[in-house]
Length: 163
Image (cartoon, rainbow, N blue to C red):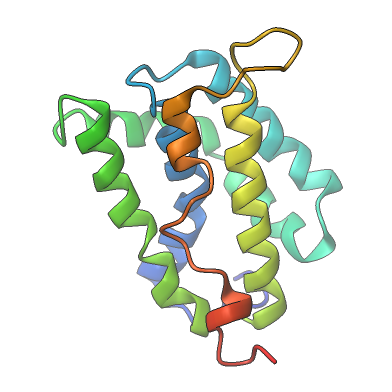
């Protein structure tokens, strides 16, 4: 088990590892089309983070990287029965992602804060990976609505160990 996540139940542990895939599907599908380029970019970012991420997060991303492609496919399949449009689908994913807030107190504070930043930057990288010209205007208006991951609270403000 990843250091800093020992207080999570097996279900919670599994869920926190699914968060990057849910973020990917949320942002990639925000404009109602789950763009393959955005999925591939998320896979590259996840793999890159196994080597270059802060040492507290490398193992977390190594565990995710092993099955990230399949996890994305599973999430996309799961969404097929949720809603026929991006708005309904994104609201459903948003509610799912909000469950992270219940986990923050159970995750070691430094790891929680680093995960939060990592999740936010992942969303931003995905949103900027497709479209636009030379990286300008790559983020669609619908992606801009979700890229801040407002459903996930900053553990620096809510964690019991925050100063």
